[in-house]
Image (cartoon, rainbow over all chains, first blue to last red; front, side, top):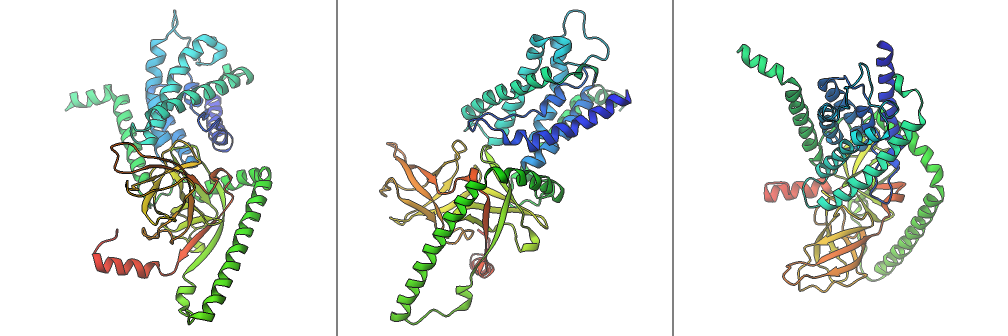
Length: 171
Length: 281
């Protein structure tokens, strides 16, 4: 148990630094952003309760905000994602329910379930992020386009990492 | 009372959610205020150092661009000084010289290196490696090779965060150099190479290619700093003002060194204006 907590803490810093130093510089065609840090919230063990998810979400969003100079913006969206994550997990429970100590990783649940689980959450995260940043509906369709292209980019990166990094299932 | 506690406890997740979101909203509103005293941004020493390391690596890949930009800037400066000395020479021959030293030394420049920059968000900020110790204060204008870059938002001891011209909240008072009409430039959040010029009334005849420079009216930028040239002019039938898109003179994605302008007479001007109108505009 304590070992997995230590690994999660290390992963937290890995995700934040990767976002700040690497993925922040990767923007495709001025529109496609890669907010991979959201995968940290999505891949926490299934039985993590909402309170912990929101507080961890706030911490990771706040850290990312410092690098993006957008205080509160990423924190707001990750807290939201942390809050709705468990409700969404409950909605898409497979027959027979989840095993104890299961993680919502691709290796345990298959690509189809993983896509159904992550795509709506990532999309909502991106959409709220761009709408709140533009502070209004004047740039709604541009924000929508940004969200969709960012969704494709983030999902591609997340799937690649899920396939490439072995041993995620034990964490 | 006990039932109230039970109620709050039952819905504790929802209440925590509300509380955290309210706190985040408060942070966003605070951060959007111009000249907010933020501690948690990239001017914070630790985070700025991380950015410096990453910029040091990135610099190697953009050395060619930096050299080209510096050469261009040298060329521009050389042209400027030659023109200036010739004008001065001419004026000395015809009129008595201007010898108010505080006028001549009005502007002072601080050069800084960009260590963090974005052009793709709706609200872009730039972090530089100069701060309070180099005399920077919030509100100072920033240029690069004679082009508008933005203004200082927050400073720490050794670093500062600038509001980029590519920020949907940033407005700069400008003038069409050929006709002399005033307007405001503001980014519309879509294309980092284009910026829109607003409030040019119908009777003006702006043309494609006209230069847009700062007006010097908003007391941030000195007059005559280059913003860009008009790329496209549209006039809707019932509109009061033109829709003008301006091609910015500075490619913000290639920004590497910037100059911060310190106006020595700003305090005098501000206090005079406050004294006259009774408020800061």
